[in-house]
Image: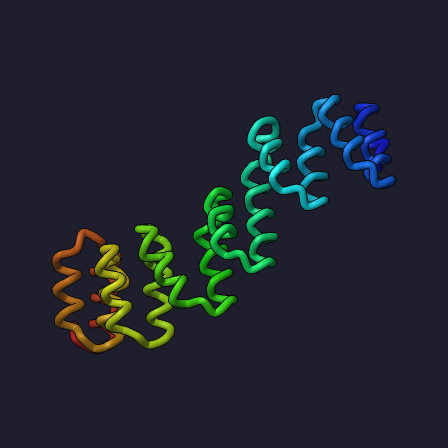
Length: 191
């Protein structure tokens, strides 16, 4: 595998890694400018602070990936606060934070995180979660907070509250909300 690399120092660094000479490999990678391989080696050896420094200074193309991998590492150690910070830095927090906190059965912490973010996508996800628990009043409040008119109309139609659904659709600038209401009325024979 070391022969794949064009730089002689990178080839020698790979051999040094196999021999457990990580300091030498670090120096060799830096000398030949292979900060991508240096970052990868530092991550693999658990030297996260150094890996983030290298990524931030010399290997910016892998900075988000490094934060993501560090977030996963911290999650495995159950350091959720630090994991959240790294998932945010990697730009994967909209999926990873809810997954992590949900799997850890930290639902109250998840709700607090979502409310503190003022993030429309996360807030809509929380509304859908509330719906899945049949906490419809709570879901309606969440959808109102983000102005998700389609979800409000859909949920009111599901609950049979056609008056509220009609009022929202009539005052909405979202054609999908009106379309959903019209289809629902048609299915009910209320044309």
